[in-house]
Image 1 (cartoon, rainbow, N blue to C red):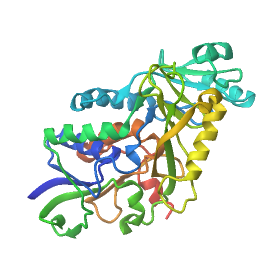
Image 2 (image 1 turned 180 degrees about the vertical axis):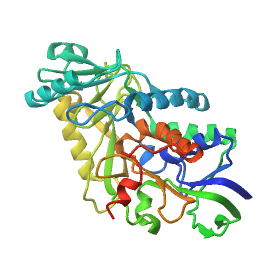
Image 3 (image 1 turned 90 degrees about the horizontal axis):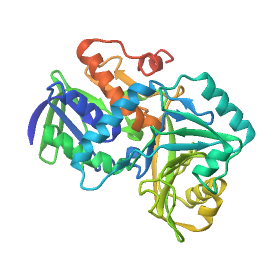
Image 4 (image 1 turned 120 degrees about the vertical axis):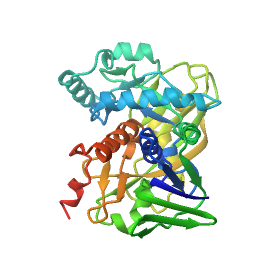
Length: 368
């Protein structure tokens, strides 16, 4: 292969594929290079939620409506490129586990303007009617708009969709780009890629890139486990968000579910561990003790994502190299943020619109 592109994107996760999609929509020539396989990094979790109420207080996510619309439309479009379903519009239940938590969640719910039908406060009795056996104190939230996604399968289907649209995707080698007077050059095993612009969407791998050494990233390891009930089917259709989350991809008649996630700021390696298993089982026992008692872990996954001081992604040009870009730090909200921010960055690149202050790279550079 010997080709020239307008943009070469390093990384085929949520950030990289979303950006490739948005660039290609404007008839730009795009190449994506991934050192492993599509969705092989932290983006490729087997179970994730599109949940616009985050944190212990269930705070409405930043740009929730715009982000939700972008990912919901994209999931539907990409679904036609997968042989098996990879997402469900099944809602998310958020029970409060203590009186203090209930008070803070209810207060935040009352002071937040939610789109009609997005979020409801349910008293304890209704939460327990909706989900018998669940731990709940005083009530919680029901979000009918919640979506459960097998993110790894979504990204694989997304890659197929983009390739059909004309995006070149190369996997299986770690690129070593060289900056020249005309742009960027990448050569490896018969591949010769020339690109006017280079974008790093490499997630955890960004920490080892000299160009971005001054960006204040914080790596966080997350582990999830696939559980299988040894007794009856689950009996509930929705997913849960409480002390992590339970992603229900199979519905009420299935007997498997995904429990996530650990939030490990100090870790020695990136592999799944016994600590992860114990932690996730303990969390499950707190929320659904009956289900935990009759379930076993049949698979485990881990990945490392990047967070920032304000827990928002980082987008922008390198301060000294104008044809070098960064799209990273999506953290735990990559599924919700990815497509919307890709469209926002392309609008910035092509039309000169200002980046949102909360996600602009300038907020990070001004501190250094």
